[in-house]
Amino acid sequence: MAAASAIACSVELYGVARLAAGTRAVPLSLPPEATLRDALAALARERPALVGKVVDETGGGLLEGYALNVNGAEFVADLGVAVQEGDAVLVLSAEAGG
Image (cartoon, rainbow, N blue to C red; front, top):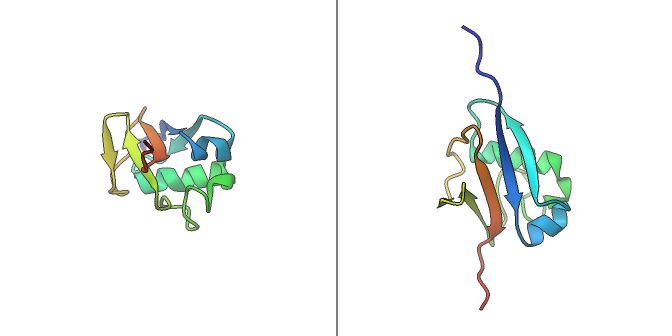
């Protein structure tokens, strides 16, 4: 049986994350068993300017003040959640202004 192919997803960036990365979205190709932690590590490799500003120094988590949302449907704190083919992972500020 052939091994599963890579899954395609994207990380959409908002606010400071978008400014630091210089783009609104980063397409990623991840291994079939990838988690949100893996997606953040891949994001850090693709856009190193985000490390220390949005993504933590290990490249596998977000700094305080940022949140992840999957497909605009739910906020996710557990970085062990699996990424699915076609997912849009949103990185945005967790702080609201008023």
